[in-house]
Image (cartoon, rainbow, N blue to C red; front, side, top):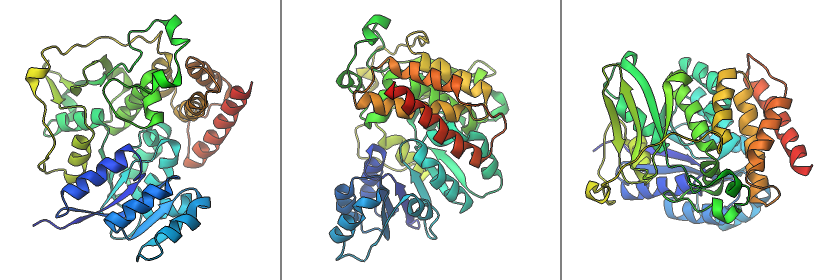
Amino acid sequence: MNDIKNIAILGSTGSIGTQTLDIIEEHPERFRASVLTAARNWELLAAQARKFMPDRVVIAREEFLPQLREALSDLPVCVEAGADAIAEAAAMPGVDIVVTAMVGYSGLIPTVKAIEANKTIALANKETLVVAGEVITSLLKESDSRIIPVDSEHSAIFQCLVGENRENVAKIILTASGGPFRTKTLAELETVTVDDALRHPNWNMGAKVTIDSASMMNKGFEMIEARWLFDCPPEKIQIAVHPQSIVHSMVEYIDGSIKAQLGVPDMHLPIRYALSYPERITSSREPLKLSQYSNLTFEEPDMTKFPLLRFAFEAIAAGGNMPCILNAANEVAVAAFLNRRIKFMDIPRLVEKVMIETPYISKVSLADLVSTNAEARARAEAGVRH
């Protein structure tokens, strides 16, 4: 029997976090949840702690610490709060794998701490590499840490590259569902509602990621993430809209061969692969039945209707702090849309405005990115108010 791996789940109450716990529950002989963290959902975090008995739980919002401590007062569990405590938990001795399932910029510093502590990272927080790909890549070179991607698209690419010479890669093909608005016109996009945007046709995700999918910003982030994960220049990354979400991504090689990874649209599969790599472990979930998918279609993305995808290519071409600006502005804009303060098509308008107005830095440090993030957010908030 293999040694049981201790798993720290940063963002255990979200979509990726709860599905990771499903896998831990399915394979208790292999995995144990040793650290659980959440942003604000202390009730679910407390329930998870009672079920999985971790060594430590952390709530990011410190005002919920008294309730969480009271709820777990009869258990031998260390209960903490705050961003610093989450970052420290990511580097805890004894943790084998850190699942970074936090949403947005908040995942950056804990990932840095996990790299510095030589942890294996199951990366589900794409914003870490969007904001700080160059910094993270540099840190990884000085560490024994490694990143295994959890996003279904990057997991697919990772799997297609196993056993291959990277020099033989001609192109990475990232597939995109196209989201709920793939067939809508520009005029129709001006009037879509929050409820419309939250109805994704294939995937069950958190609100922020679902909106990013509807705007195709998510695919722009994934392109930037792929650039850093696989050391692939953006011009060799292609986006293919694939409404069925069965082909999760592909790699084209110099001989014309294309390798693809297929599966049902279920995040348990890439999470399971990241936790067990380089092994594959059994799943009790229903596998893909190809007979149910007689038509698999692919089309070019429309960057006129979905300008955020174009902005992502522009941001990675500029480099420096521009992807950080892109991410910060988008996080503020999406939150404003979800709170019904701006319209759906105001998201790209606001992001473009902040990208133009925020000072550009070509060579960045982690400190530069922290200050850029704060400034871009402030500019975006001001744009929402006006």
